[in-house]
Length: 246
Ligand SMILES: NC(=O)c1ccc[n+]([C@@H]2O[C@H](COP(=O)([O-])OP(=O)(O)OC[C@H]3O[C@@H](n4cnc5c(N)ncnc54)[C@H](OP(=O)(O)O)[C@@H]3O)[C@@H](O)[C@H]2O)c1
Image 1 (cartoon, helix red, strand yellow):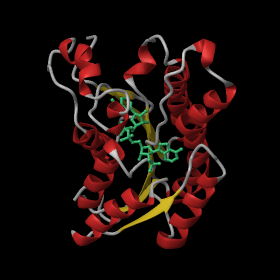
Image 2: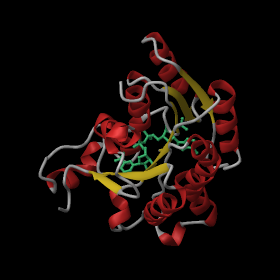
Image 3: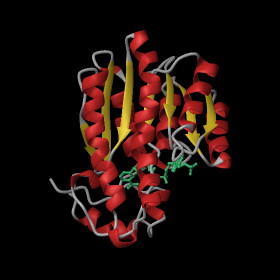
Image 4: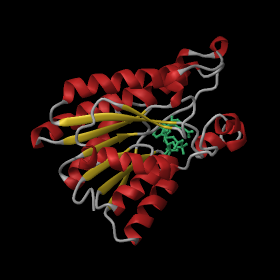
């Protein structure tokens, strides 16, 4: 098992790629802390993992309120006494064109997609530094490499995530490795909320692999980045996108 005995906090683990990552990490021996806002879905993830004989708990946190992130850290320390892996995966989408994009929406998207990752990393870093080892995995997007009409807040937040990832890697080494995953079109609830896989057909057709990704396609890369298999990889944004725009 690649993560035996490790404690992993995964934000946005009630659904999609965060859920798939929590499940894979637990099967690889990690104690996983599942976080999100929806109690029913959080409980379903943890119940399933416990029924399979794994160690897991959930903490309900709205990461648009960055101070709640402290509760996630505190409850993890209370339950497991340490943290080895942080996956900053929770994400909020925004479809407003600039003319309708209010500061409230801009701040909500940045709080969930960027500021919560910064704040949570600041909380776990001293613990990881003290034990001489830790891993942070951020969630970027292929949206960090271009722009489209109507996604300004989301696209800007993912561009920011790339810069934050590289800054974190510089400042948190040598003990802590920090990398990001930039998913392409992955079939999750987020994609369903904007019309399902058909809206991403152009991305599928524009890729050599000719398919939409699955949450598991992301989870396996997260496992690689969390484990010692990637021990010399740091400060990288790893595109997991079926090869679009190569
Ligand atoms: N799907 C794609 O094609 C794609 C592509 C590129 C990047 N991404 C990124 O991948 C990450 C995961 O997204 P996904 O596609 O797996 O979407 P998803 O299935 O909708 O999952 C999003 C997760 O984020 C959590 N979340 C959202 N807002 C939150 C908040 N305010 N506080 C706490 N948790 C919150 C949700 O939990 P609750 O509902 O329980 O709060 C849920 O667990 C996001 O960062 C997204 O931007 C997705």
